[in-house]
Length: 425
Image (tube, rainbow, N blue to C red):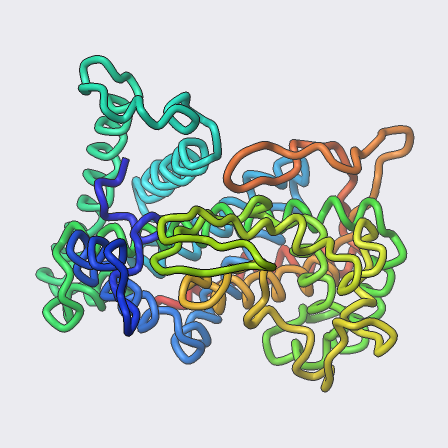
């Protein structure tokens, strides 16, 4: 549906030292588009750049805490608002408080959910019977839908790009991914359409996945009151009643970091992994795999490898904190962290938004642990596993209590948000 523009679906454009016919064909069809797009992503999301986005993440976390304490029943949409607000500002320099920006954010989120739907295995009959690809468009409804979806999303991405271009022309030089791309477009060697899809993909990667992980965190806290108490004890040691934890506190919060990592192991967002296609010969445990073979990195199974993760079905952050477990690493001021973690993919295909997502998840868990208590409602069952199906997954809506831990902390949350200062000025 993206007509060879969405980086997630583009093949790698390079070749090996002894390239196969398959690799040569890939290179001819996609002359380094993926690598050029990936370079732009790298510039936008390297650790130094991601650190500069922290004031925005702090600001939006204050919005989220205020909204949750006021109306916890909307936890799912409020988590999505946090994620989309952060990435909308980063990608396009737009605040969701501006007129029409929230509706634009929802349109991009609709694109996100559409991609998750159509990219899910066996969503269409053609996924099983690939010979249907030979049908003319007038005989193939799936081709007609793909053309319609591509036209719609490209129009949206280009509109957002054009808005930034117009702001630059008018002297409104708000920092954004799109502004960086437009100012350095010749350096990256990407067309307007290619650049709009690279940045649109970063939005897709950052919006739905962060919200899904935070929903799984709430589920974990309902089922693991022991670990919620450990979370409360830890954040209370570094943050008093009159202030919330901040990024500077994270080195002293190993339990927070362990809970984040365990949530992503226990309930991986991309449970089935993203399919990859080999561009050269490979072998695995005696099986020969020729070029063109489709390989799934099954996140669900990888995260339940019993040798690495004893008791894999148990939500157990201790596996990242205790030397009794094979996953333990020191020092605890640095580990656990999400760098090179399988939940974000592998090698040169690792999720480009890892550094931004890691900061968001750690900050949100620390601040929710400081401000709120999440628990089951008396007499109401919380499912152990009742998740959506698709490319990315998250818990289906479930009923639980989310309350401020004290009146004092509730007042801090309210006053902090009401006295807020937008980091963009």
